[in-house]
Image 1 (tube, helix red, strand yellow):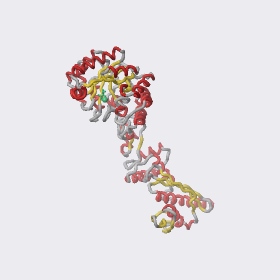
Image 2: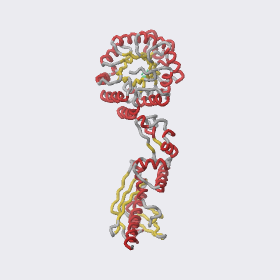
Image 3: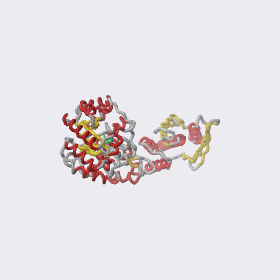
Image 4: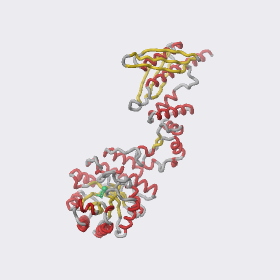
Length: 508
Ligand code: KIV
Ligand code: ZN
């Protein structure tokens, strides 16, 4: 471990306090997998578990110590010989032993006098030290303990040979100002490194840890994704990135592995992350609004306080009602789709329209939309122009479609029945354009791009006239019938334009 003064050491408790998250229970193999990842990530100390808890827990800690990882492997133990012996039997490098020091815990939980708790702490530390392990001593509920007594306990722990003392804010009630003062006070009586163990009951765990570090604490207890009892512990990713970006303090963490570690822990523990979670939440590097998207694409720092790559992530842009041309255009280039300026405006308008209806577009939605806009004939080129169409369908009626199209400034009306609304609409369109001869529908494919009944659908068709002139077209939208009519009309126009071009070449 380095002696670099600027460096903060990370004591990761994902496998201990993190596993105490309600609903989380890990197998020894799960724990080993996470421990290996934490080791690659660069945490200094891995609190592998609380061996006295169960056979599986003891096995997990043993499995981890056998692995000979770079990190110091630590086990939690109460100030009881039985707890310590089991922890020693797991071959750990260090023991994290604790006893509560607040009058509340002493009276109602331990039923002990202050002096007894102090004696227990000293006895246990000396016992651990006689076995040659590193000892970190925690005064549980320190932040609600009587400060002169707490100082006495920590001084005694230090004299008994503890290597580190830890200040747990067990129920997350301290504030940054108060923890700064507490660390400053404790430093007057101990000359060994101080750790902080902050819980997030008021959402202050990271802020409190940072304040304690500013007062001279050297080690931070953290958990990946902020897991832990109740509202959890200080989150590893938030603390590390705040230290790095806001406080210019070093850690041994390889920040580019933060995201994959978070994902792994979330998958194994089954605790999903809220999308707006700092650093590792889905939205932490996502942009939708036109103003922000334009900003980050021009100069990322405008709306990103850190580069996503720093934590192993990538920026992404969401096509939605707040989107603007810059963002959509950047997204399309990433998807490898080239569009003209007019097509881009059309795509943006459609995206906003869908956004107004509450729809968020995934990459595949957007590419389908863009493909369909890019493949469509332009309004000026169109020979047949849609004026209107309507369809009637129901349980006890034959689906019937009526269309009104304009060809050479003349209106043509046609109605047709079919087996369903799409079929009747296609047939009505063919009838309305019958003066050009039959244009058959040779192929029709419908794809739902995203799930759900309001999913964007992509319709792909192929049409052909009696002379073998054919064309393909596609259209995307939330309404299958509208998308089908759009694709069919476009297909008919393409055949007619091709035919006209062929005729004019033949005439030359
Ligand atoms: O929150 C707490 O007080 C703990 C102790 C075991 C340090 O987790
Ligand atoms: Zn805790």
